[in-house]
Length: 357
Image (cartoon, rainbow, N blue to C red):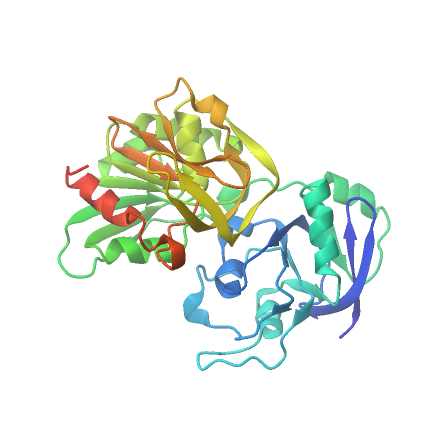
């Protein structure tokens, strides 16, 4: 492996070994605390424009399992790991992490102190970083000027796509694609829903012309406030059709209702993020991947009510829209571990479309 460098916006330089594609890449450095699920993480559109650091010390232990992918493409700008596993062991393994990143054209660096790097990001907040084989000129200027923009447009579907339900068709759901993941489509089709996925910039008029029983606003990357066109179209949908929103969709729905969003210091990235249902007092450990959030104080006076909060920083994690047949979550519903006794979000949405919520 060739020598590589990770250079932070602060000017700090970490020397390591390159793996994956041989290239130079600037991205917004964030860390993910998950122990497993790196295939899903690497193919998550939410990471568009970001350099992803894994806090777990070894990456790729069970290799690459294509069926676990959330998207056909890896959207991260670069990967940072303490060590990558060159001899993965799993009966579903179809390659290693190095081969996968080469195929995707994504560069990586290993052999660096990820514990120290994580502490730096926690102390100073999310910052830009470059992975390179040599220290470039004007490096700090380039790092300071980098900004993730046009993220939703970059990851959204280009043309509408239709997914047939399993068994009898019960409902028709239109999914506004801000960065949709495969599991959402599976959950809906598995409940008898025909799913039409439409591009992010589809108008409310065109969505309603499809005669949906419900609309889903998906997860996605970037600053929610940047999506002014989407926010205006969502305003026109509110109250006209049952809606479920998650991740970026949750933030866009809140902005459409008159709330505001802000940026977290270092974001929530991982599968161990604790949240509390403010109505029942029950707590759950959730999977999350976001840098932006709905500010709790801005919700007051809107049509929304806070339903979940983060137990780490008390930020808003979910909203209800009484009388509008709409609700949203900041986190990804994953009914494993401590979330298996949580009300099933998809069942609730289906019941809502049937007039039972």
